Image (tube, rainbow, N blue to C red; front, side, top):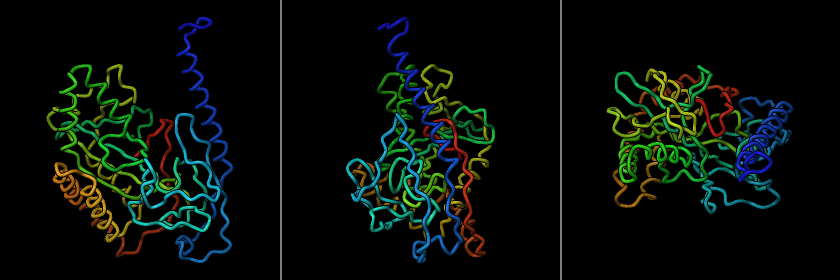
Length: 342
């Protein structure tokens, strides 16, 4: 349909883009005015009595293409449980809720109240996929960016990370991309085989500068390596269906491992917390999977132990030396919506 020489679809696209730009400008301006309350290490835990603690509150405007929790006005969400289609449970276990119905970050005070730039009160679940092909020389599927220092893997916020295969946008990309060359039944078989080989590299707290006293990020990082280009290695990033702007890039595996190690270190998990987190993930998977998926759930748990063994050793050493210190995170924000660089 044409209107004044331009199609309605074109005008809607331009309008949506302008709204997103306005939202980004507003967000940047608001962030410039925010200063976090300065905290000493002993003041961070909620168990520390801090009657003078009065940090600023910040609730960013919701992006035009997202759904966010509204302001809390004496109404409690179903924290620590499944709230309709939203999972408000934390991988770290049960978290506190204050007398005003605000959830409390399990890692303690952050120096800023409110929902911040996140979409949900309480835990915000972010699922990332580290997808590679090859063995000795590996190509990784990453967001095509001019920033050479920031490796961005496909990822997305989801309301419920339980039983998830791929985040919706990534799944849509994979299906639409492969369907250009293969029939539907082959595409689904490729996806099924890829999921059989995935490894859960990390599931836990995500130290990010968007975290506040009342909203925080928790992430799942899955690893899929297609050694013989028989499943996801078949993705064609040169095709027009590449809506996520992904590209294959040669990266040394040690670089990826070190990036994930940094994530775990910044989460400041002790050895006991790490083991508890892994066991909790496995139990949830077993409870949610049907009988046919029980062995798959066990596989994820075992792979998690193997994949994190070196990282856990590092954490034990850090804990023994008592060198873990609280510091502000320096995670880089990207202009790619729904992306986090690791």
